[in-house]
Image (cartoon, rainbow, N blue to C red):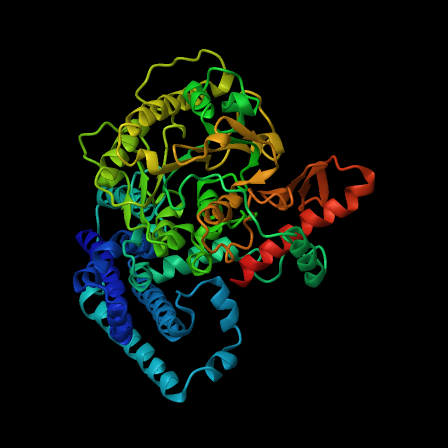
Length: 619
């Protein structure tokens, strides 16, 4: 039985070395590109370290079949089992080598890894071959043959000795069967943490080519297939001709006059963006919520500018990041942040502020692997990114990470030495389940959502403490604070998840940089969190033309509407009504537009979804 144990472990080591070998080939081929990026040598070398976790998970996936072969061998003891294992391994080596060689071939043109969209393109190999020179084609064939041959020879020569028939006690067979499946399962999900491993685990550098090399190619392609297989062939929301739909959407975004009402005292203030985890409108008294849940926010409103009719475009944090920083509305079925080849096409609020001379930073008390956020946040080129692992281990933590009070304290401490102007975003987490905030319950009502509203009360208390401390800082008088939720959450009112009341969230501008005449005011116009990017850039007199889905909320001529995605459909809100459309059943959950406007408004909302999803597919 010793041979079975040794074989599993040696094959595991082989796959780790094989993945490293594949990366080395890619690095050698694109060495000049890496030099052109001016990536430090230490950062290039460290990609092998950052790749290990995802490589380990992928190796465990691959070893599921060899484990079955090896377990069977202890009973049957036939040579065909060895040959079956060898054949399986050869096929996986060949498949991975094809993927790696394909990525070498397409990277210079696409600057991305192979994904589902690329596979669709590769269904026409002649067209692909026609785009490459004869020399490159021959070179790639040679690379493919050499990688496959060298790898399989090494595997057969040093990592998989053929078995000889032998007898094994039943006890050792059972031990082998009991020990290895749990270990493989633990390895393939990336550990015991709540969130299974994903591609974001390997993102570590501001140089995107290094991140792409670090991500396991097979794992990435498999995830891309799962994310996109159902809708990459044809837009599932093709309600009208694309030309018609685009004309309708263009009309929606048509602004009679490009102007803006200035709400700032100074042209380029510091900006602190506070993203509030799961804060629904029902937590805010001014948005229709019960009093007493967020009393500190209520106090801030007296000197802030509050939007009372604003909606989240999605229902997940990863969707919110693209909506807030990229001005890109959420789409059904998937999130653009799950697709690294697509989100790199998005504009970026933080990049625009970097160009304008801002020092940018991003703070999160948990791990950015959650929702695959790390890759997208790194794409936005924040000059400093702080997440849970960067906090002192002695700081009390909950199951998801550092509690909000410590997140706020860390940011305040760092900003003492930050050069102005700065843009600093922080994303809270204590109002996310399992609600293990370090505070006794204060609110005794709320039914099933009692824990949720108490977690919001805790974060709200932290906000109050945060602003009392922030007012003591020398940079405070030059700062605009923006508070907005990432998405909503079920509340004590139990709205349906696909209803507009469920999707309502707060947005408030606050701080000494705000003109006095706007303090304590409310704006009732229908708005979306995707509008934040354009609105802010216009206030700073910076170019917002690339944020084509984002509207300037301080332009009186901007049309009022809000869109939100549902699982397979959308919601559409206008001043004269709203609808929620389910594409699966081709029916409306609700449609409150008056008869004379129903057809027009329905076409608007459906066209918006169609063009948005088409753009996602085309990226």
